[in-house]
Length: 451
Ligand code: AMP
Image (cartoon, rainbow, N blue to C red; front, top):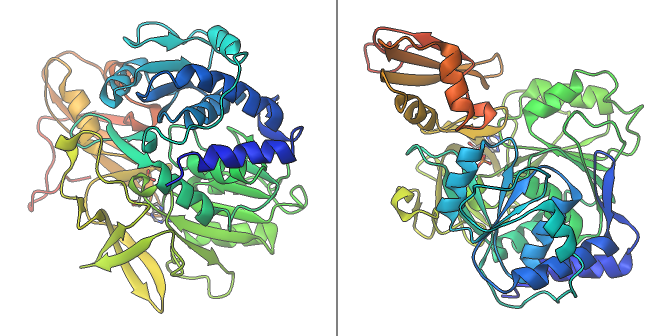
């Protein structure tokens, strides 16, 4: 395979549109010309080594430059947003075998136990004489960490060929010149924002809040779309160019889809599906207003790779599927038969693929994947806590509304203290909103947790 395919496409985009903005966030931006110049300079430094590079920061032009530099230099990158507590970032650095940490925000460097590049040093490295994309290197483009059931974050190595294939697949949905993205870089949905947009020479505008600028396409989770649609202003009048909204990451409720058509009329609404283990999304379905009732399909048969339903479970194989987790002890039996058993139940009806719920394992909370056992594992590390169980409380759409922890302890510890302890170790979205102290974890007669 050609390892340099993606950076070559970005270079080509820079030749065609040197002064076009490649990336914008919060008033700062980088043009294609600057992007390839700075990324080439940084890559000249990075190519001396081959270990993964952890990129620690928030949405910013520097983050995008660092990602591009890793691809040019043939090193895989490990994206970590600043919302991930430092202790967890350190664990991720150790688990991923990162040989370098690039800090793209001021004040982040220090105590990572791995050589670090600060923002100031980064600016100097941009001045290096640039290199061309290397034709060999790490077979992985990136390693993304997700909540792990064993109490440790779980690293998923995604191959360059999977990412390349994904770009080809996603470009058909995201073909507008200007695109809005919302996902944090440590969340695999951001892959859909960054790569198909840059390889086509388009502009990515990122936001933390509901979008305010009119752009051609927008990728988000259904929960975020629902939030955007609460505002009357998120409608055709203010967004005359918005052609495509692509939702991914959790169930798209009919109500949200209907509201979207009410606000935008002729919008192209895509319900895309896939796990991080298979490079962002692998199936997609264009939702139409006609017959909008019941479940919305997640696929129309035109997939990024091979997608089957085996004994009721969605099985993904071929170019998109990772070969296993980074830590072989976490392998579980999900990776077998040269593919990935997703744990998602599925059904084909008239050629359309439907999501039928999870077989086991994680819950989705605001689009984030959360292994409740990882939270339990952290709570049980607190002195004096003898038992604990977490549940997710559903909202009226069947999505996780909040996470609740039942805690058994004789120690004089408060819910606030537990939350403070967790805040140092877990991302915000994994911290239980409700903590109830109980004498024993409440069970139903058949051994299930009583909510
Ligand atoms: P993540 O690895 O965080 O992207 O989460 C992947 C999981 O999110 C899948 O295994 C599904 O359980 C769920 N998921 C992703 N997209 C959809 C969708 N369109 N409809 C329903 N569930 C989805």
